[in-house]
Structure formats: C-alpha cells, structure tokens
Image (cartoon, rainbow, N blue to C red; front, side, top):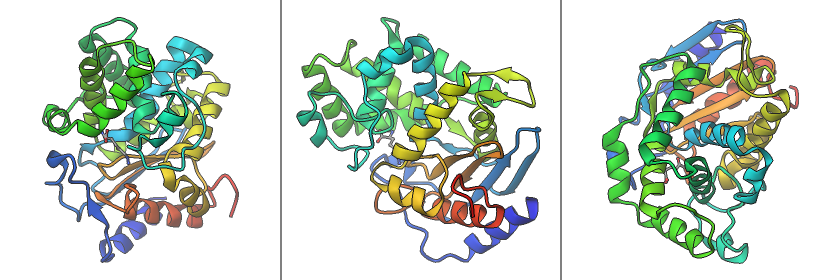
Length: 306
Ligand code: DON
C-alpha cells in the first residue's frame, strides 16, 4: 500500500492542471496549490501515508459527515423531517430547489442541508456548547485530542457569509430553522473550519469502513445500519452535482470539501483521506479525485469491483 501511495504522490507532482484554490473564503486562498497528501487507514490499525499527509488543512464540507452522524445520534429518523436524502444535481451553495421544496434542503451535504443539520443539533443550546460537542466527537473518532478549529478561517467565512446567510434566512422564512440565523451560521462556519491532516481524517473515517465500529480500538460509533446509510448518502450526494462523476470514476462513498480534501470509504477495506487544494469547476479537489481513481484501479477497492 505504501508503494501505491508513493507512486500516486509522484504522479500527482507532475500534474500541470491542478484546478483552482477556493478564494471565495479569502483565508483559504493563501494555501499553496502544490500540496498533495494521501493516507489510508485500515481496520487493523495500519496507517499508510504519502506526501503532505501530516500537513493540516481546512476540512470544510467534510465536516458535514460528522455533524450528520451526530444529528442522527440525537434525532434518529426524525432528522429526515429537517432535511431530505436525495441528490440535488445542483451546486453546493444553490438556493433554487429550496423555493420549490418549501425550504427543506435536499440532503445533509449541500450547504443548506448542513445548516439545517447543525440547527437540529443545537436543540436550544448555545453555539459554544454545540461546537464543543462537535469537536469532542471528531477528536473521539480520530482518537486525537489535538484537532481544533481554525478561528481565522471561521471569521473569514463569517465576513463573506452572504450566500450562506441567504440560504439560512430563506429556510427560516419557511419555519425550517429554530435558532437565530447568525448563531446557526457561526456554528456552521466553525464546524467547517476544523483543521485536520490526512492521517487524522483517515482515522476519523474508520468507523464507516467496518459497519460502524473502529475495529482496532474496538469501539462502536454507530449501528451497522447507520454506517451503511451514511455511506449511501456520501456516494449519492457527497460531491454535489459532481456525485455522479465521482461514482463513475472512483465508485466509493466520498465527501469533498473546498479546502481540497476528500474523505472516501472503501467498505471493509480502508478509510482514505486525500488532499490537494486545487478544485475543479464544481468545487471538488481536482487531483484528489484523480488520485482516488488511481488508487481504486490499483487496489480494486471500488464497491463495484475492478
Ligand atoms: O459554506 C461553505 O461554502 C463552506 N464552508 C463549505 C463548502 C464546501 O466545502 C463545498 N465543498 N466542496
């Protein structure tokens, strides 16, 4: 595995077309597009890393997998009264469907959906308490207490919140959000600002590899049914309007973030985190996807076989 990852890292180093670093969050625009890191964590506790796998980056929308898991733990199936579970076929920050569907977001991974999910998690609590809960959960599944928020990134998003604020106010106008919009947004931006490296992220995904259990640590995080369902959502919605393309090329559940990270789950085999800051036109990591495509080709790990 280490050799496969090193070969991929080497191949990615010579790629000219690396996509474009997100700049609508100014704090992310400073990141060097030449970074590339990849890590595979396996259920038996092995960690295989290559490139900049130990360099932290902004996980952004990958955090939506963790808040979804927390929300399902708290609300169970009633979460689906707050958010749907169908692919949207629209960009991650789109508002169009909200008008047609009475303010109910299509799925938990588009921005509107993730905002509705964090509103549901808050349950009358202050943003600080909700954030402490989110961070505690991420630290627990990654088995790493050093993971934290990047307050500069969160502040940068708050300063440029217009689109997300529009989504939130629009949902609130349909009675879809219970809490004050600015409190919900502040919580959402901090959740997205969590800084992790590929090794931490791959470890955090392990519970989705083995039916809800981190086997090496012998810890059950969610039921097998819940793990399967989260993986299904990642497969169908994790890359927004690029989810079909990701399934076609990689064939694994995956969740991208505009920081250039992707967490991808090969059920029964391993949790893969890859990071390359340049994004494609849809907002998913250009080389991250390419690297995963190559990894499944070499390993046969796609859920659809070779
Ligand atoms: O709300 C936003 O726009 C960002 N915090 C997260 C968006 C994101 O990561 C989309 N993913 N590719």
